[in-house]
Amino acid sequence: MKNSIILTLALAAASFAQGPAPSITEITTYLTLSATQVNQLQDIQTKERTATQTAATSIQTKQQTLQTALQKGGSSAATLGQMLQDIEVLRKQITDAQTAANTAALLVLSPDQKTKLKALDAASQLAPDIHEAMFLNLLTPPANAAGPGNGPGTGRGPFSGPRPQFRNSGPPPPPM
Image (cartoon, rainbow, N blue to C red):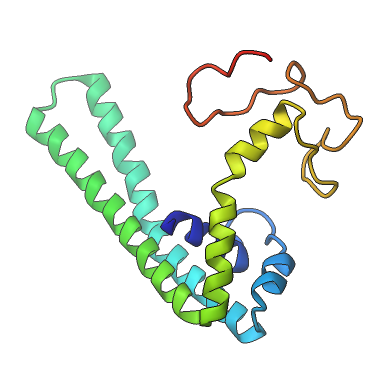
């Protein structure tokens, strides 16, 4: 649930460093967020991004160094183990920053908004089922769904287009 809340609030806040900011009109309306709350959420996200960018860059560098050391060979187990340990420490820093951002973001919301958010989180748990049902043409994608080929009459079916990721990550279910 915590990750879903972080994701939901991330949509309500500023965009990631890459790409344009997503529209937050729907979530702002759904939660009845004030301009002040949106600004607070954006500030929280900016602080989180700043706190995690350095660690993420360090992780990437350390993983490349570890990969190089493994390919070359000759590094001691202690050296390789230390590299792995350093990466895990950085990952924990990122997780801690995300947890702190989630806690701060939730403090911005009123009790009524938190209740609405819980309902939204519960609905988000159905996303994989909904996507699979759309894939099997059991549900029609909403008219405003992003991406080419969405909507009625587009020929999307079980044998056209890329196959979705199923939650069990095993083979897709047999055809009906």
